[in-house]
Length: 177
Image 1 (cartoon, rainbow, N blue to C red):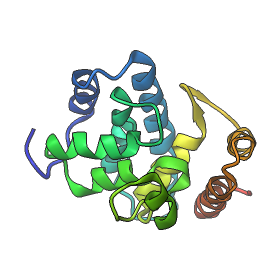
Image 2: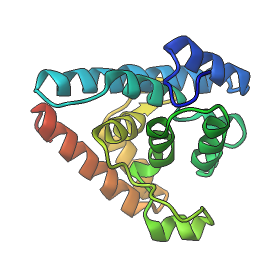
Image 3: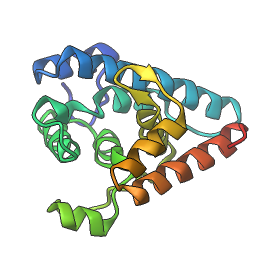
Image 4: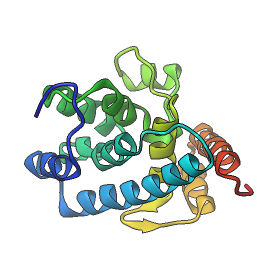
């Protein structure tokens, strides 16, 4: 793969397979990519500048770290995998910021993660993080279900961030929250 260049969809799927992601993780990534692309296309139709290819590839690769761990640390593991593969920074940023609607600096320190930004900032990062929260395994789920699960697990700040992402993206695409 050429450094700093986005892989194709097939190359991204191949990277998931080469890293021994389970078929279920790959199906999840494909479902997230489908929803993220729909959202990105809607944003584009509303006149927003969004990189559809980046959204698709970032969504396909967002859970590549699950090839090694299913803990929250899969984001950090995924970053290392795609850095080693020579993928561009925007893909790395999507993987880094997709967990829990973002991870605060304090939460990252508590997790023992390197000092960095783990909150989605760009529209592409926000779309992938949001789409990921609406896909359970490979099925679309209501936002309320995701938020309920986060609250059950005492992850209230993540629930609030996911709600905030929902509100922001709904406003951008013209849907009621």
